[in-house]
Image (tube, rainbow, N blue to C red; front, side):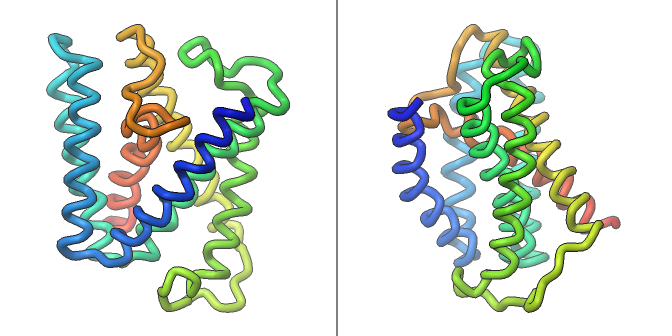
Length: 216
């Protein structure tokens, strides 16, 4: 666990600031960043599902997700785009750390490494980091519109819903990996696996966030 966790931490130290930079810059930088992620994840999906009936629907869903990401960032701004990303990233990290530390009953046969302790750890860490992010937005060079922030019930429910969707997205991709008899979608990221392994929750969250912001 220690070596894998160390790899995750080291690669995250490089990848997370890089991703935040492109998201905050927006414009051409954002298009370039999202295009690279789309091509990489599409290639991994192709490797997993070529000649399968769900290959084309999967590519179309990825396209929809990345278009939604671009629209959320461009229409609603970096803060509203980063909010669900922060929840997804730390849901995944919380699930990994708590699952490894506390183990316990398995969550589902679809992904044997998933545990109930990991699920609750994902919820817990996402709540903590979301609060820290909101209170310290200026660290990222953004205007803090949430000074003297106090978490309300709506915020709490929002975090839990986004975290839950992220975990369900993770399980859905795990299901397709299991059908393809592979552990990771790729080996591009040390300690993480493939690009699709790391954005599996985000690609399901972002379209829902866009629809919620647009119609609700």
